[in-house]
Image (cartoon, rainbow, N blue to C red; front, side, top):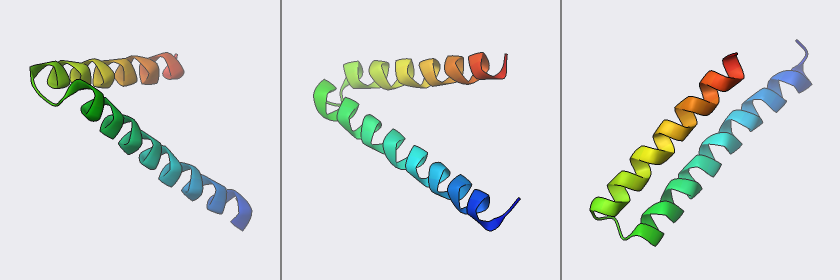
Length: 57
């Protein structure tokens, strides 16, 4: 691996984390954070897990 590939990999990891934090914050803001908010967060986590499994296949 050259330096450019390593830098790209690190940038992608950081961007992915920032995007996920933004999505989580948006979901919390729209659902109000009560019981409905917890359900929405659980659904998002489950969807992410399913997407990761799909990528592995």
